Length: 230
Image (cartoon, rainbow, N blue to C red):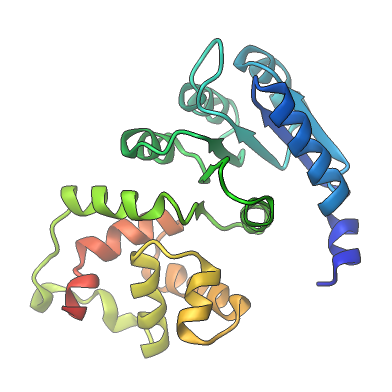
């Protein structure tokens, strides 16, 4: 899709930014409007405002900071999702601790991004979430993989039929997903387009009857997908 068509599409989408750092929030809003055509950007400076307004505003995506003055972003995520389970929430923060990342994902966040990322990367991840992907910033993905591996031990290969449903290319894509790579990195690794990666991911989720990328990563690690490369 061309830049003009993308901006026209984005102009119909509503983005909420929940962050008490006004300079950052207003700067991000201005970039989203000017560079990506998101003309309906809302800013909320605390969790109370967000809880009162977001159910009525019904944004297509909410970007939530962890450190809010009246409530943590994780608690806010839980409360918002209790009101509307289909709401798409992405954490956008400076906090890169493993505990916080895992708590946010288990609370139901669609993704976890760092404010230290470039705007172009943040924008790509926003677009991916709007298209239905669950995204993890490349800077924090290894920490999540490390923590998941601590809790889940691979099954014996002879007892697993996990891969039998997948094509060889789907298996390759799944192994890269299990490493925490995003679609762009997988496309570059396998010399295919991002669209092809997304199509493979959709097929994998359907065949394995798994709801989203994060649950797929957990299932793949439990099934010893990465152990087979050793």
